[in-house]
Image (cartoon, rainbow, N blue to C red):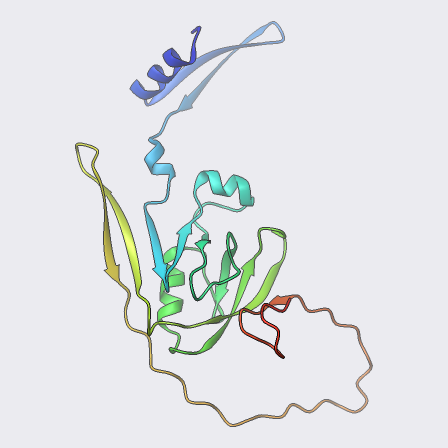
Length: 205
């Protein structure tokens, strides 16, 4: 093989390729399996309040150092504002390892509520950050999309509306938390990001 074009043709025409490599003056034999590139790319996504969430593709998993399939925010929209390229690890106390678990967790939440969530920021892949997500479904659509490829290679996307969420939750009675008077002073550092205004400042972190 003297050029990449010939190598590409061999890869396209075979499911398995046998190599003879030369390294350090020694020849080594090895076999690799080829696959369709479309199978390595996401074939589904969620459109939530004008935001787009997809499972991690092979290429994105290299960038984020996370396993394929986890849910990543590629367009924040109205609900995930400020979470661009973040991985949604948990929503409403439920782990969300894939797109279906996130869709189920979202549909269980009452409309107009602020739901606790945990994300993994692109700037810190080792720490899960506690955030709040506003459930907004009055003005925008929630739907899932599935990609299909016909025999002639034509790609289409089929959209399905997600199940309706419960109605708004009534405000509960105010609760007061009391601490023991003999509690020793401690230093606690909390890392968080709030998409909602807090003491007049939005996006406090």
